[in-house]
Length: 234
Image (cartoon, rainbow, N blue to C red):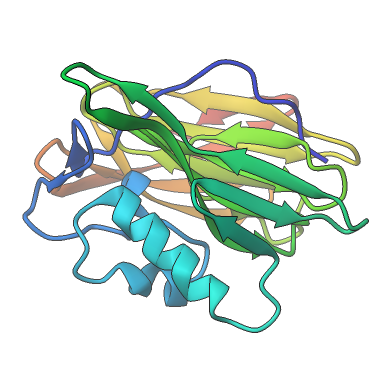
């Protein structure tokens, strides 16, 4: 399951400007927008007190590595994920000289968790500015690039994700779970508010919490699938 990743999509956090080093509220917001680093609250809590998104991702990876039955290994800049047939997928951090002879990571991969409803490994991808997530299929090793942590519907027919971003634009995505791949059904990029939470009301309806650009909750919106289209409820 999964589709091949093509191209680089840079998605920054609302709460982590530029390089992801600074939180707009002065404290980590790992339960908001892009900052939600994991499906479970247990893993998200690993980032308590951490303001940097890459440091948070690596803290989660270290926590996972120490647990029994870890499905991955790290050797320096290389993350290797074990597949069901004994093969592995390797993801190696990219480095670039930005001038003055100093090298910077332009892409770094951190293992977050295994999502059993999807049979996928969730990997955080940190760019020099911003980031995204990969779903890595546990059987085929195929990678699907998504904007944020997947939130699976009750009957596991779809999942949704969202990202809050002041720099390059916020987005909400809905993906259909098919037998051999994920199909993105809907994407929305709000311009006058940012998503701050997402809950499935049913397999065909989602409630999205809205915040203004200062992080204040202002409203919510409901989007529902009617036929083959996703539409806003009035």
